[in-house]
Image (tube, rainbow over all chains, first blue to last red; front, side, top):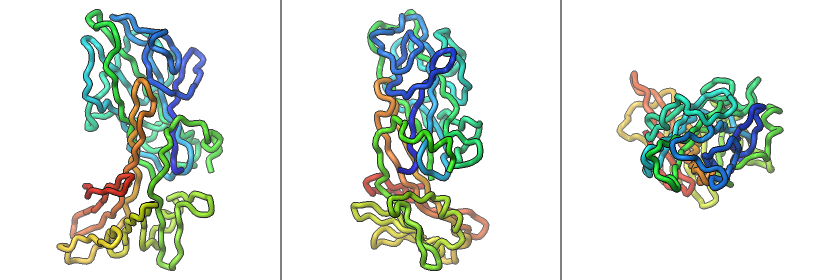
Length: 162
Length: 149
């Protein structure tokens, strides 16, 4: 009970929204893709992923929404994970974008706003959808990146709720 | 209730992470609001609506843990143990409840929600002389706690 959340991924020109079950990066603009079916050729970028969170249930206020990478697994040579929060949806592309590396410390975590552009999501307030804005991810490789699986990445999404 | 939100109920990929602690608010006239009552969940907003009448705000779980804030005197109790800043000789002024749940959701490539942990932050703020001070316990889902900032 209290607030519950769901992660939604959007894809396509017309924006099809799906409930995400994984965050696999690949060479196709689709949710919950299989990396064996859509591998990334080294030197290329993955298709961008547009992810947002939908809060449901009962709460008074959700605030302090943050995202960062929390593991210490590092990257393979030439590999980076880019992330940008508070984005509007644009059809995902596999062209390298200008986003920054996802931060590795809570102190430099990315902050996330509500879909309406506020720092908090107030339950039942007029016009509040319960969605966050989009987080855009893209996995990058270079010609130096070794073939095979990359290290698993753990991201931490944190929020305060009352 | 916001109909836009409620119509999405049941459509989530969140791991089952039920609250292990629930709250009970007790007011100066002896009335109380329990978070879960008669198969309904009360919003914390209902407590905020009567915040000037609040005396005790308790967190309890099914394991027998009890954390209690006395917002009149500025005390935190943990079962039989009562904490106060005993070095503070002056009466605490303007005591305000602090309560929220901090959710930490781990996301991996393979699993959009590998884990979901909830910390309960419970305590109070008060004014001493010209300073704003606070005492907060950070309580994990098992009832272990540390004194927070």
